[in-house]
Image (cartoon, rainbow over all chains, first blue to last red):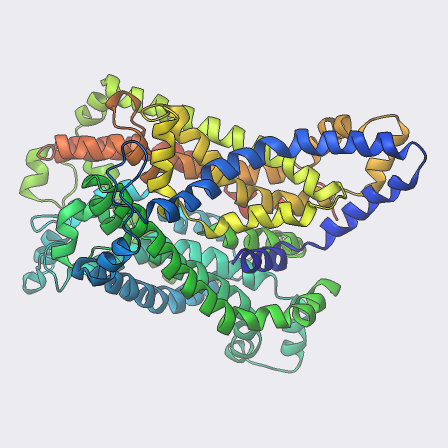
Length: 340
Length: 294
């Protein structure tokens, strides 16, 4: 997986200059006094990169490996785990209806997010991809929900969606009292309320991403199409959309991974217990509830590993069948773009 | 998760400089109409929180969707006068500022190595940090909590700052590396001729020249730390160390009948991140075209 993340990063951030820079640095290694220079360089590398690597390994990589280890134990989190239970935790996870429900909800959120946010984000980005006055202020304002913390979003929306809350009152004012429902507790409605909140919170990010993608499309293509007499819609259909492909695919990837990890919003609005009866529990809320709150740390770790493996499988599949097109086309596509 | 995308944005932002903002014209009314609707949808819930804080509880009970009549400022004054809010505000500030300084500082150093030194482990080092994008906090949180408990760092701000730095490193490194690599070799050679070592080159040239990248990654780290919820939820159990997200949650469950106070508390706690973001927004998307044109 590291490879794919790297591929993405390299492709998008453009690693070409990185290589040039390194070659220059190396070209002086051939001078006299090389031994001393080598030693000095090694010292500099250690001093400069040591602290970051140490912190990163300790707090990111090491815990993930520990999760895999703890996951094989029945353990309350005190002392050294001794009660080795093999794959029992995983067996429990994948036969527990609560987890399977949570997994189903995550699956629903993945698909619904893509369908609800993708087309809308592209449409809004097309609209804003014009050199018009006020564009930057519009851009700031649609990004506001993304900058606010999940806790605030959850608290605010939670209050608005209460049965006696602002949304239902507004519906009554508008003479639509027939549409008053319990947005949060009704199991048929709750997940849709969650989808509305998720879309509201994250669509700004999708729009900004699509806008950045559109602005990287060379002007020459639009000029040529205009000279050929293509209409606005034809230009968008045959130039913008195809060239936006890589951006859309990267956004979809991020959206999928984010949906798999969803925690804060559900936990804030539905609390630690109500979410399963309202039909909005996710794998992460299941993990916190069954692991941390119940004090079963061995089991909690196993759930974490399960979430990681499931996300990884989805990411690899996506990488294999969807993103691969970009990696293959990278040389021709990106190279052409850079040449200008 | 958002990390990879941000690098994409950075990547594209660098190509963006041709489309300058000059020569903007007024768009068609339809454009502005749709944009207004979109903005209204984005802003309305935020305004609901802010304006709701100016109402009294009886106003809210009678009509939850109404306008303040009259405007009440006691909710905001009470929050501003409460030591709890300011303690949490200070905790959040310490956490976010330390995370930002730590993540950007460490990432600058290691990115400098990756971008400008030539040695065997260079690609491995880059791949290591890039792989961090695949390990979200959700997966690592349970063992991370146990680790911090063993280190005696629970219930202390250090216990959230260190992991926050660690989890901010991948994005920061990936954004900064191409940035540092783009500094022309001529500058480095000139500095070498003037007798500057690579370390003094780092402080005298690299730091100022990479400032736009530093600002961008700094904002991302700051907002991430300011808004973080899952990590403080696991690590901080003591109300004296609560950061604002935990504080908002605690306040809203303690004062569940005092909706107006909850709204006031909530809106005051989102102001810093909003301010910070709107001041530097341009930098995030556009600022990376940078001082050094690669």
